[in-house]
Every structure is written in structure tokens, then in C-alpha cells.
Image 1 (cartoon, rainbow, N blue to C red):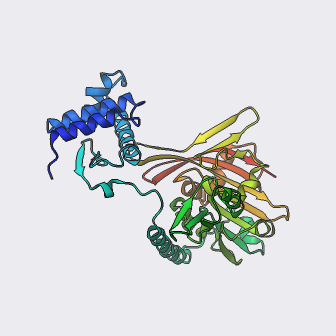
Image 2 (cartoon, rainbow, N blue to C red):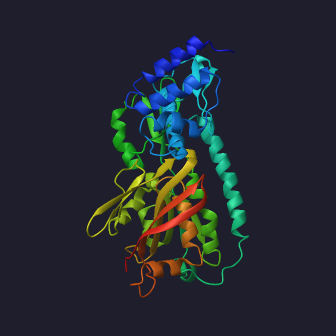
Image 3 (cartoon, rainbow, N blue to C red):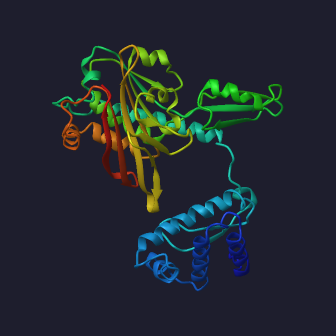
Length: 396
């Protein structure tokens, strides 16, 4: 269906004058620029935006196409924000296809233009089914790795001690709210509610005679956690110890204190493992944040994950290996956003880890049993990852 130019103009005018775009002058100008190109049936590239718009506005000192791509990426996100909030009832959907710099207009029904406010139940079930299939693939790969000839110092305790190993995968805490009158149920993820105890404290906001609130048995595992498992299995495949796969829903402090444990988490779902950071230099300031703090002798440094243009990621991840009160080993591997755990796992399972640590920290006499490690991981679309060691400190 052809959309009249007058309707397109009305939509552009409405968007650039919306609250969503009120503080984004450059994005307003960029949207108007792309619309003029659209009206003239023209083609535009990143270099055109750099020269015609940004250089003229003083945003560039040279013809840098990268800055243009960044702003187009921001404009895509800002348009998504507009349709999620103010533009839920718009009959025309405006998009900038990924990898292009041209506007597209599409008619849509009022019903389909509204964004869902809660996670559909079927979608969650499909995600769980996909996870089970992925786990089968991972377990199959567990038995296919060739044996390593040398023992990496990070894994020696887990390989040589005659102790079972808890392998804990962090999964976000979900709960359900059931309306007793309509028998409708919502599955909720709230970053401020990460346990049954916190859920119990929040129920005072709801009337018990109208709603039933309880922990959900539905969950999922973030891709950045699951994708690091094959390398972990490669590191542990020589052990004769039993490995018990657990989730954050079915592990407790006694399990952690009494068994050697490896926890693969993210900052948003680190749960009770955050309690073991008190003796380290690592801190997590916000439950729903994408940043962590490193407390040095002279300063407190903040590291935040970034996703920039065309899916280029910067992520931060840490490994903390500590002794529990019962003398067992606890290893916590956690990242901020997307690729941190995978990049960190590539580092700590490599044959050259010790060389990198000793070359960067020559004062070390031997590799410590307990330590903290912070890394910066960068990569394009979660591939070709580069991992830089930012901080390493013995906890022995």
C-alpha cells in the first residue's frame, strides 16, 4: 500500500517534535536529512552523511564515516524507543534497515504496532526447548575434545583433588503474578528481585486476596553464559571427579561452602555469589547495571559495557577464585553484557595464560591458588574476540 507523502511528512514532524527526540538535536537533523533524501528518491551512504550533515555542523574534523554510522545506529535505537512509548498507536512504522541508511515506511494495524509489555508464555517455553537442545549439543562436545598434555594452573585444584565439582549456571530469577479473578498470569523479570526472599518482601504491593505471586519454574540461560561452556568442559575433561550441573535456583550457601564450585554468572544474575566478593577488589554497584567497580589502593575505577555501531562490543569480565569457610575452592566467572565470559574463558583455558600473567606481572614468584582477574573483551558480532588483562592480584 502506497503511503501519501503528506502522511509521511506528518509522521516525521511528529517524531522530531516528540519528547523522545527532545534532547537529541543531531538525531533530529539526521532524521530530517534522511527524509529529504527519501523524498528525492536518492541513495545515501555513510560518507554522504559525514560530509553533507556532520562536517557542516562541526561534528567532524575530517571525513570520518565511522561517526556517521554511530549516529545512524543511535537513530535506529531512538526510533525504537519512540514506538515503544509515544508511538505505540502509530499506523505508520518508520524504520532504517540494518546496514542501510535509508528510511522505510510501512502501514501496520493498530494491534500489531503495540509492543508486548510482558514476555509471552509460549515464547519462554520455546526458549527453554531451544536451551535443552543446545545443552545436548554441548554435552556431546564434552566427549569430543582431545586431551591436554599440561595442566593449566587455574584448574589444577579441580582436576587433582578428589572432590566432586558443582558447576553452577546462573539463570535470571522469574516470578509469576496470577490474577485470581481472571486467572490470567504474567511471567515477570525484575532486576531488583533475585530470590524468593526478595520476592516475599515485595508482595506487600499486591493484595493477596486478588493476586497469587510465586517463583516461576520457567527460566532461561543467557547466551553469553552458555557459549563459554565448551571451553570449560575442555579444561575439566581429564578429571575423574563427578560434575554436578546446577542452577542458581537450586544451589545454596551450604552447597558452595562444602564443595568445590565453579559459577558462571552475569552481573545481573550473580545472586548469592556476590557475597563472596567482599574480600576482593571487585564490586557490583547496581543489580540492573552493566558496570562493575575495581577498588585499587588509590582510586575506584568503573568499567561499563558498550555496544556501539554495527554490533561492535566492549565488555568486561572477571574471575575470582577464593577459598570458602570450609576450605573449598569457589571460582566465580562473571561478565557485564555479552561477550565477556567467552573472551575470559578463551584466556583462562589457553596454553599461554601463565606466560601472559608472568610477563605482565613479573613480581609474581608463583601462580597463586586464589586470585582475582579482570579483563576487557572486544569483538565484532561476538567473533574474533580480543581479551586484554586489566587487573590481576593474588588473594593468597
